[in-house]
Length: 356
Ligand SMILES: *Cc1c(COP(=O)(O)O)cnc(C)c1O
Image (cartoon, rainbow, N blue to C red):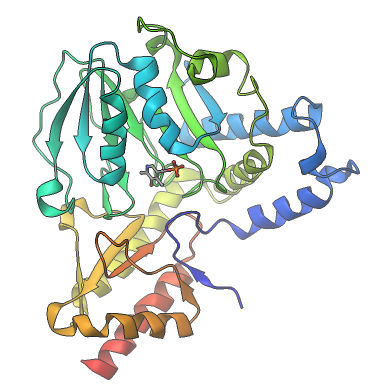
């Protein structure tokens, strides 16, 4: 039986993307070879990466002057590539969780770093508001969706300096005004494809301004020049990304996905707020549409293990909250069907009837 997959990452992907990847592994488009055994320089693979880039641009409405790259190393590699390429003297970071902190730590190796605001005082359960972005920094870095805590910056704001965003866990979940950003990056394994590939969307004119020497592989300009094929790219993961991007287009694009994500999140947050056993961990105006975190109220805390078992019996996986938050986290990425959210909500309601 197919599981209700609430994993935080790697996570649920569109069934059609998985099916078509399986076919391509056996025989790519009837060419008599697997996607696993063809050259990345072949015309067959070139067509795949070209389509992935074109669909990324089309789905996210990415302006002409931006390049889309597919690289290795994960989002974590971007934590150092960003300052390597962009930080001359000083950068600003918004500290909204563990991933933001890791990014900030790497930036400190390259220059001065200002923490513009932090939500560490409340275990990152909100997005800081009313902060001002300094205008004497090379860039301002944000994490739009904080996968572990379930907070999200859902709107694109204006920045007086180059805005850099880690969108690992909410890329393609809503329309993005790409023009407001200089660089957007993320690991594919939350909302786009399997683990092993990282996407970077970068406006070329922000590059080439730092004084340091950048190692070839860590220089964005290398990968722009070579179309993400300076070295062998992660061919199979790129193939699956291409299939996911096809699926996104086929269902009506990111606007449609945003509506679907809003509808799914509403069903679950409404139940969390209604159910006498559970309580959300995030301040309401910071709630993520992608990772929905909740715990049992203090008087019911002892039932958390039992509820986890209860959901497992109903075919749900991946609901355990991150150890730094506890309780439960339902990741409701693009490819998670409403049916799975309803199954969870039904389980919560029934459990409350038995125990409440
Ligand atoms: C998962 C995640 C990362 C880390 O991604 P890797 O590809 O494993 O390096 C970074 N930032 C955010 C917001 C994430 O969700």
